Length: 252
Image (tube, rainbow, N blue to C red; front, side, top):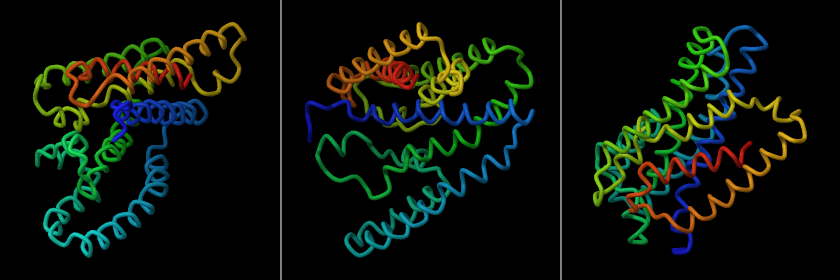
């Protein structure tokens, strides 16, 4: 209901950039240390961190929804299956669940609709380490790896632009892993360009430049959150890319 923050949904993309940065930095650091990527260990650690709280949340929310809104039980069953398998975003695409209509009408979305972004995260955790492993062993030089990652981000943005229909419901392209991967990949490219360890030991002149980029990124994000809305055609993908680049500057 805060009309002056109509672009608050861009917070998801800020988180995607941060997540793509941290996960990629973690994987590359381990590769540099061990000379290999222990994917089983990486996936096990993610499962230990995410599955227990997810299980608790699903049990509590499902039990509460069954008591408070028993008429939702049939649809909740399928949404629960999608949540457990981290496919909530594709479930909502297939069932034409509108992300922005619920908020524009100020009605509460279904209890598990918010898990679409966690689903994209988990799919990224599953697929990106394999792609990154391939880049690390096949491409010599940081610049080549950064270029390929940014090309992948560009491809995702292009798919979003091609699939988006101006004036229509943008939920289909907003939920898609393929169409909404740009922010994650921009964060990943930032980690390849500026690993976390190197950011802590940069020369003062370079640190000042990154600080300036961070201040500029914060200003752009503040403007975007107050300017864009979910039904603004400029968001897909220009607004999302702008927010992701601003978030990358802020993270750096």
